[in-house]
Amino acid sequence: MKHKWTRNLSLKLLSLLVAFLIWILIDNIDDPTRSRLFRDVPIQVINGESVAEIDKVYDIVSEESVVLKVTERKSVLDRLSQSDFTVTADMENLNEMNTVPLSVTCSDMSVSWDEIEAVPSSMKVQLEQRKQSEFVVNVSLTGQPEKGYEVGRTEIVQGKTVQIAGPESMLNRIGQVVASVNVTRISNDQRLSATLSVYDKNGDPMQMTRLQVKDSSGALLAENSVMVDVTLWEVRNDIDLEVETVGKPLEGYRLAGVSVMPETVSLVGTKEALDALGGKLVLKDKIPVSNVSESFIQDIDITETLADSDELRLVSEAEPVVAVSIQIEQSGDHTLRVPLSNLEVRNRPEEMTLTFSPADEIAVQVHSDDQTGVITVRDVKASIDLDVCTEPGIYEIPVQIELPEGYALTSDVSLVVTAEEQEKLPEEDGQKVEE
Image 1 (cartoon, helix red, strand yellow):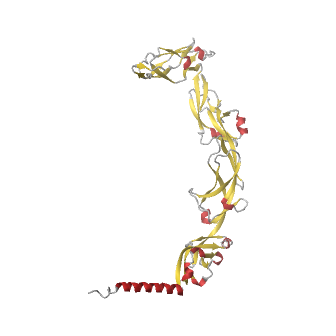
Image 2: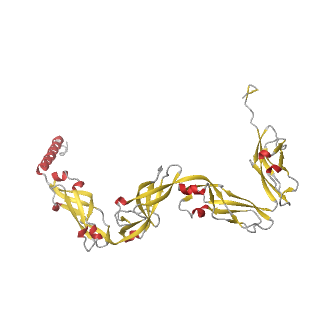
Image 3: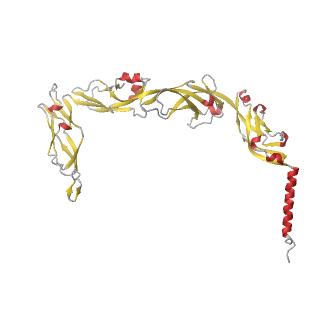
């Protein structure tokens, strides 16, 4: 026997469906009143200047959005959206509890104020003493100008400083103010816009929404930006470096030579300042050689020489320190630099490829008791015997030196020779391939 609940099941389901349709029809015809929530409706703050008039600033410490509960007819609720509501906090209504009552309006005239409930109903703020301080603006460059130029000078049109007003706690954290300028591929002097950024004393960027920035005259800066005049300087390479010495070596010794490594430098500056150098830069620091009897090397910082000029400097990322080599010899000593082309080579193996070190010249140090004697490279005969270089390897071979009468070597001279087998020509069918 069937259960009584399953008896006439299809008829019962049909009845349920008809009842549901009748309920929907009545609901639409009657248009009942209901409630609906609108979440995350933003709060708009108005009349914030009223707080500034009492030399204070405010910080919102509660949520900056609310939930609205709207009770209205269903037909009205269905056509509403979050954008139809405006929630305002009028700072002129700030009370002693540091709260501001919220006012809600709806663009749909069918909704009245008493049909809207805001949660929360007020905005909580925190007041803080307002402070204004002056800060120097540092210009930061991004990008590179056209090749052959570098930025020589930058000048902020509105002045070197800005006035920043805001909460005292924020101003006390400010470490520096930076104007960032993009100079990518510029090839002439230009006036460019730069946006100001504020960094705390740890170098981290700070939010500027609560800060008011003015120029040095007190005019409010639109979008926190300034104009920067950018002046380009010319890059000039291969400027010779010269160093002067002061004093005399110990008696019986003489200054044999002064050399700088590197020998040249690249500078950037105005055309007039670069032309005035005449292709050389004489370093400000003079090397003292009084009573010295040995050669030595001393480092010199080029920037100390350029510090006296407002129109010259080293190119970016250049090493500012150069090494100055001072050669001191006994009186009567001479250092002659003999080119390898002057060297007589004997017994050179034809089947070997030879390379020499040093590759261009050898230093020959000679001494003469005759202080008035003069010796030149042409007076020196140098030869080397390569008969030991028949096998691959590295050899240190003495150089035979013949000097005019009255002169003697103060140290032996040698060359490092690297011997390698010559590459054989490829062969085909047992025959050498002709070039």
